[in-house]
Length: 124
Picture 1 (spheres, rainbow, N blue to C red):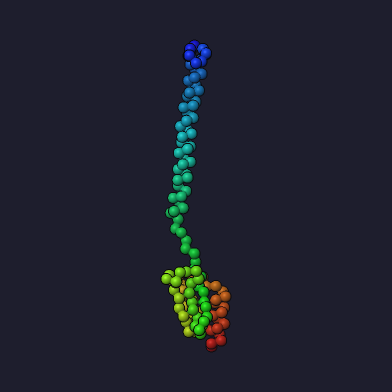
Picture 2 (cartoon, rainbow, N blue to C red; picture 1 turned 180 degrees about the horizontal axis):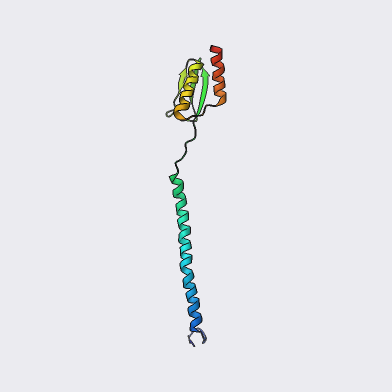
């Protein structure tokens, strides 16, 4: 029996206390291991995202006709980073579009290609 100033006398058995203590002590490392594993998973996720190379959006070729010339350039690219050319004929503009497509893996819209093709047919 245990006497304490704040609690009444309570009879406890040594076997019951040790069994519950052992079960608590056995459960605590498992909980800690699970918490560490969960933390490792959350830490790995951002690292894996950073390791993947970021894909650049594909550049889109645009064509504008003004002052008797065909201006070929990339759509939505800053002027200092853009490559452009003012071609005199539609045939040379088509060649330049193919060159940009091959060099920069750019996308040539069907409307632009059909427009240049029609103008080249008129010139011939």
